[in-house]
Length: 107
Image (cartoon, rainbow, N blue to C red; front, side, top):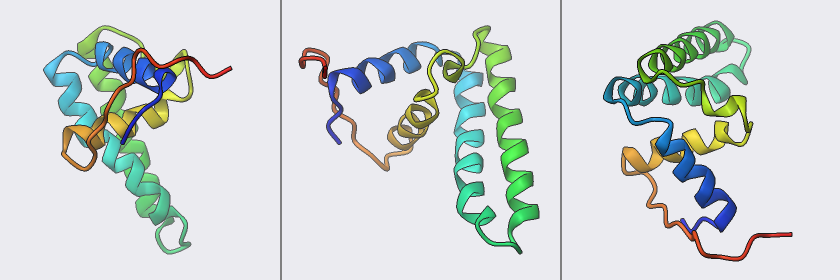
């Protein structure tokens, strides 16, 4: 997947905020739990499971930032909620991300 300059910069900033191995491990668990909670929660029967996945997943995310010593990236830019999913997808080999740091900015 080719990222434009703006999303490439967001991804690079996100990677910089997630250097500690324990933070990365927490995110490797938390991000898929949160992502899985969305389609599971779309069914009435899945709501209790989705609530648990969502809550525990965010617990892992915040615990990771304790190790990192930095605030979560989405605090400054909500798009980082999606960037985190892209980061995780690249980490586990689901996506190959190609950055375009020198592409012109969209106006």
